[in-house]
Length: 523
Image 1: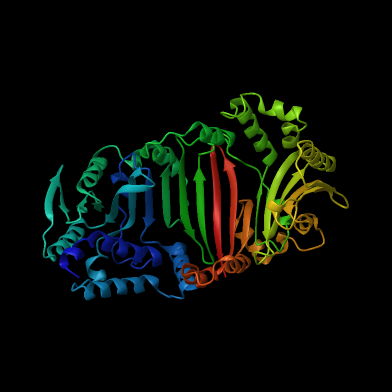
Image 2 (image 1 turned 90 degrees about the vertical axis):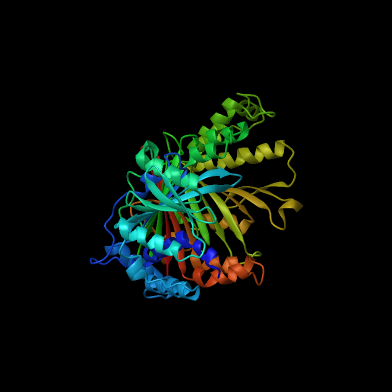
């Protein structure tokens, strides 16, 4: 490899070294490197819409859990050591010698961060990164030695008292204020210098509020300024989209979101929090309904107080109207005159669940399940909807009877089975085929709550109510049946997918924040 090409790898070599430590906690001993220092966010522009912060010297239980995950997922006892060996071997193959322990570890701090900016045409056009340096002189020596080893010298520069190097591909790198900083180009590097001396992301109210309660044992955190991304893209939300967002109670203009990766010994947890839902984020606990869904489900989810949110959305749409179709304050009135009372239907619905079963395209089935307060409400709701469809002249609508009452809809477009809408007890079920709907009312068989993996999932979520569950082996069997034969990407991923026991999502709300936990459980 020509030395001019190797020169471009300086920042990426630093990131690779960072990854080695982050993945396995290598180098976190008490006698070398790492002493904290400058917050990487303090050299990121205050307007950066995306910022990723990582802990590169995990300690204690976090370090132990990362090492356990590396062993479970890849069968590697010391992943950090393996990656360092590969880095040193790669450098040697390119005609350079790299001694990670002597050249990198002595100055490497505890944290690193990278920000993205200038979001245009579905991509980011600019980036900057900072790695804490516990010893600036050691860090500066390492950078200079790497650059001097190249046959083509980088261009020297200085800005506001900070010296830097501009490489052939415009990547700019320098050491200042306790960090090794590099950026996609000189202009962005100078923005980082300005940020360190003035307004920066670490000091912004939005970032501070969003990251105030991050998990203490997280290994990486991702901050997203949703409103900032919209501004970066130079986009305006069109009226139809705005109406949809309003109906869901979503307020993206000034919203932020944060995701944190928290390693466990038998699972990986990703925590989310956002103020996207405004002052009244969705709340409630639908875990009881979720646990009663069929134990054979490949995946299932449940939403609390769906009827209430549905009614709020309908009120908003009715107030605003549907541009070009329905004038303001006419939607509910028009439907009511046609025999369907949206308010009555919404008022009768409580929690809602959805599940999927099957292990092939032929056996794929499932149902939407809605709970009502009383048995009479369930029957009346289904009866009114069926009556409305028949009055509207919808063909193929047939009344069904038996333990569950309701109707079915048959048509060539729907395939060999009908869509069935039925009520039994205080439940309404909508599914493809009688068998699918019947399983929603089955009380003698095993439910999800009886499933061992489901129990593990609820345990891992702790006090957070479970809202979604996917059975890992069952989902993999179904995916294998549905994927085209010989798909290389799927075949490469399959050995890792086989290690997943379950996926679980829990959610709750407090104050103006909606929070969620995604758990990937390993066998």
